[in-house]
Image (cartoon, rainbow, N blue to C red):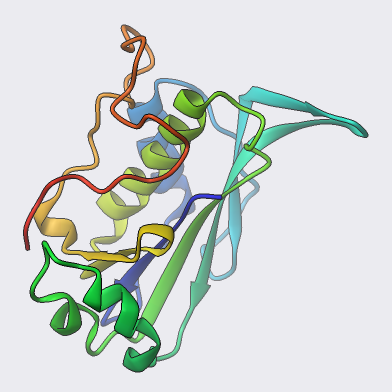
Length: 179
């Protein structure tokens, strides 16, 4: 499962409609979402990417959840230690008062290319619309400065997508960037 945390010092303004429009522009396809004022969790539903499970079918989804409390910096010690390319990892997280969790759902049966493209496209859209101070990629234990990276990997464009993506699997690979 792909999971990323976006950290903020102030309460991020979540406009679900703007995030949805931006994700659609990045991915080049329609996304569905329920009406939301952004105050609670919300789903972006990738209706063009349906997986068949033993008990039925379900479209791939990306969930965005919010936590509005200061983080415990000690809980991020391993992430900070693994962030070799980001020597300012601790200072980026210091003072984080709000967190958005971006995670995929119902996508494990998709091709690795589609799975990574959908997740990264929505993550880029959320970052573009909210301007976080830090990005934590949980399964690679990396803290990154969002201002120093571009998530515009070659996997994002739907048309003319390369046969082999820069993400060889469904795991989130961090770009080679420094803080």
